[in-house]
Image (cartoon, rainbow, N blue to C red; front, side, top):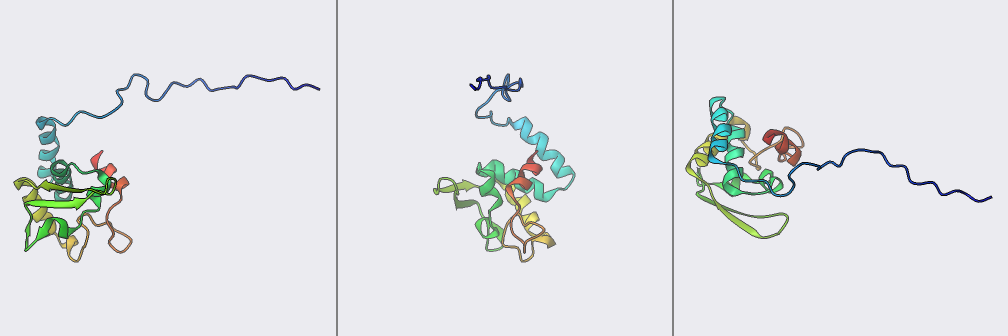
Length: 142
């Protein structure tokens, strides 16, 4: 007995990127940066402010940013003017300048009692003080 070939049944759902602009996003304008930075300063969210400022200064990927260690940006009881790390994706060293506002926010963050004895710049709450995950970073950025 022959078996009839039936056409494949497909759900009629729209494509996920229809009408959306895909690709690289435009950089933030200075007014957008200040629209984020000022409320963080007013609310005195030093950790988030430092994380945001370092992300802007370094232009690092989130996975590299959350893996920063205190020794990468802090030496001789002060925040460094320049820092250098090796990117995890390209395995190439990246050097970046830390601006004055970022240095003051980082110095305030490093004086926080939560940072005592921490190896990572963004310590997590669990797993013996490992760094925060990239998913947690994404939630903070959103």
